[in-house]
Image 1 (tube, rainbow, N blue to C red):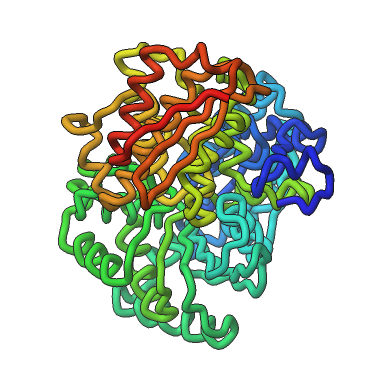
Image 2: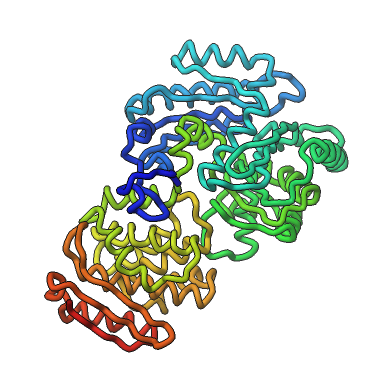
Length: 513
């Protein structure tokens, strides 16, 4: 949050005035990055609110550049040809999307292969794209910055697994600290002679040395990388988890052990068909699971979170000025969506101010959800009325947003669902709704119905519709309308106000001043 003394800035409350339209943010409105990894080559084009960008384009080619390097010391010839072909395609696509120059990095396989420099020259000669080959500690730093894009101010240990390496970096209060790079990538482990026993010894010896260098790391463990995400998908299937969103998915140490055992006991083709994981990825999962089990055992984190953000997002974060990094990614994204899609951009703030008396005692995390909901309350108005509530729930729970836990996604989804409907039972979302407590479900319903009513007192973004007063001990909900807003309190508005009061189990009082 900016420490501005500008009254207009501070008028936005604890979230500050959104700055997605600031020149420093507009410069990042469409950015393309290419990540040449040991297992895959991917291009991502970011677009929208720079602090919480949408994935305008995202394409991955499984090239396995690092396969067989233990024996040959060179890049996999077939993978090298596929990677070059993919990069040619990416360069042409980027030109068509007006991304400006692509930013490209290569990691462990190209870094270590004797023909890595030759491959980079070939790419530049044929496409004009310069690839920066980054060393392991830099790879760790960029991955950690990617995590910070989604979790500002986070603390813990970032563990990024690629095909040929695994990096660890500590983060504390939004800053990257100590970093290490290891050879514990599943492609390398697969080629290791001596089988499971040799792999286990190498993993334990490596992690023992890392513990000495990194010190105690018992906070949150952030998992970055395709193999970790594949394991999380399998964990979701094993648990019959109802929300298929990987970002911010949480696992416990016991869940990691159980899922590693589940992977070892099941046929890979069965796991692939259950989860939709690609063939090229699933063959590496057993080796990655062996590593993850030992990482958790070594560092004993109190919490394990999956991050869909990594090195590519870290490359975007690298280009941000600090004042943009400091902003809340959720609020920035919601404000961007309101400006782009709402019928009256700016009314979300009026609505937020109007319903705040209902939530005087909530903590800052919940107040943030209320602000996000108000900004998003009208962005789905183009959906068919019969499906608008469903679209709102889907958008909130499944959108690629940073800075949201799964429980917060569900709370936001339920609130927006109740913005358009009084009921939620009997919908296909009931199982997802159970991810939050009954108390939180009720509060989401109150928020949704408050927005549903407040939207009826529609004047404009500078409106003063009146005031709500809530007396929880007396169970009285009072509405004080301005003279200008009084005619808006028609039959439908009265019915919605009564529905809100019924949910609060309150008597109503209406005054006009």
